[in-house]
Length: 200
Image (cartoon, rainbow, N blue to C red):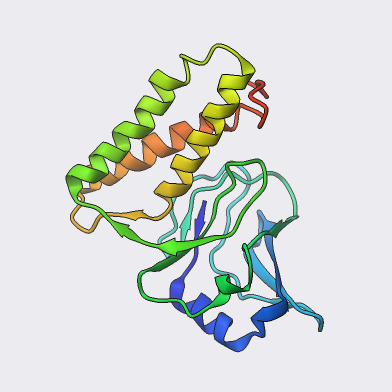
């Protein structure tokens, strides 16, 4: 998922008539990632937030406020993003976070406040990822149960996009991201109806 710079987005929201906007995520593996906000007049291209390396790159950016954890395919691609309404573009606060998750087959633009957890709570969240992957998933016996698991796991991944911990050690953060990425990888092996897409 992508986590965008709060200050840059706040400035863009203030400069734009957000009552009639559509948002597109533009991915160019050799060039970068863009958010394009369109109105009735010609579209406006948001400045590049971070460079995306060739297909196969997965990891974090050193740029402040930007985190790149998506796996991109070959070539240019554009994805329409659902914001859930004009209220999405209200003033951004310091505790807000804007992310683009791609768990549920299509990319979505989400906004929410950061939930600051204690170290113990962060570790519990990491354990929830692992239980969802190694306990609950193997217990599913048909497509119907896997479809329900798919929704629950996707909800958990999206909830985690707004999790933060100011006192976490590097090892705790690494465990958190590895557990989340492992669950995300498993989710992507399924279709929304619970049938198996492929083996990763």
